[in-house]
Length: 107
Length: 121
Image (tube, rainbow over all chains, first blue to last red):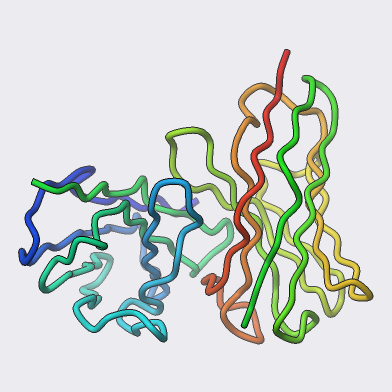
């Protein structure tokens, strides 16, 4: 199975900050990497697919990038509604696997 | 709009089976794969498998092979997950999710609200 390792596991930041969350795949997955946001008690929602394509309706402050097996989700200017848990997910090979999550908290 | 509505919470005993439904609306049900993902309390996300509603063909994560069955009923636009031989570590919220593309892209653009399955000994 492809292992997805996110860092950091948790992050404290303030409104207006620029933050980055990284995800490393245990082997090559091309750009088959997706990012989700999950708020407490809710289902996840798709933010970015194929590493860098913004899902329809997602604010442009979210962006994604890739370099080999390393992937980054960047939020350019944190808004109050962005405090949540973020997951990366690879869709290159079965079984589909997720990172362990990054909890973004208000400082 | 695309909507996936799941059945309500279940409490089952160890060794029993549970069946969760996921009713789709707002799009052509047969045109998009449905995936199932679960989340244990306070834990991350775990993919269980997918099903092609057009053909009824499933693909299961090896971890669940032999215990999980995914089916669809296109007459009522509903997908089902059945998990057997339940154990306490199967206690989780189970989500259905729609694949973004007409073919199996493996990313999920719409999700059900989740169904809590509690397994008691």
